[in-house]
Amino acid sequence: QKALTLNPNLGSSYAALGDIFTQDRRLKDALKLYLAAIKKEISQALKGEFHATLSEIYTRLRKHGLAIKEAKAAVEIDDKETRYHEAVANAYAGAQRYEEAEQAYQRALALDPKNVSATRGLCNNFLIAGKLSAAVLNFQRAIELFPKEASLHQGIATAFVKQKKNAE
Image 1 (tube, rainbow, N blue to C red):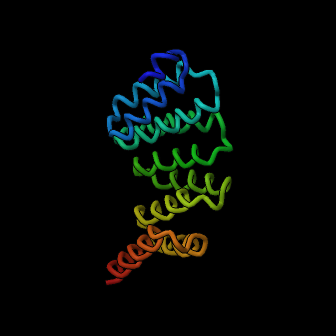
Image 2: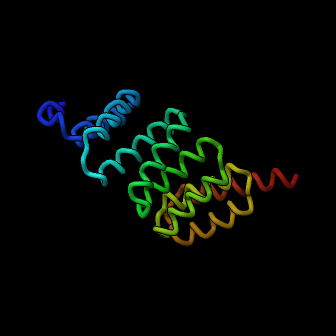
Image 3: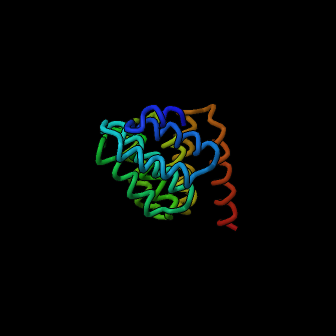
């Protein structure tokens, strides 16, 4: 809060306090600070980060329409930033718009094929959408890329269990 007092016109001061509130799960307070950060910040790059973070907070609050809007605002600022496309994908997945989420994860991975969180997100999106064959195939590919990533092994196990249940 001291940084905010010292630099009330600096968007990153608001965002820094917003990060603290996000970590403390004070999401509504964090939202207010990030919205203020966007208004105060002059750097487009930082504005993109703030929009992406707002999207993540809205997703956690299950306000998916707002999450999608903020993530798309981040992509408009910089369409080469993987994290922004991943924020779009996560927002769509949260809204159960799995086809759009898949496309956004694919865009993120086209920019950074070794992005483990986007890879995990795509795999889980297939799993949740009930596309079990695609889930298994993508989990297998992901495990080849990231053999030590435990969540991928858990995900493929879940996909196999669901396939078996569907076969019975």
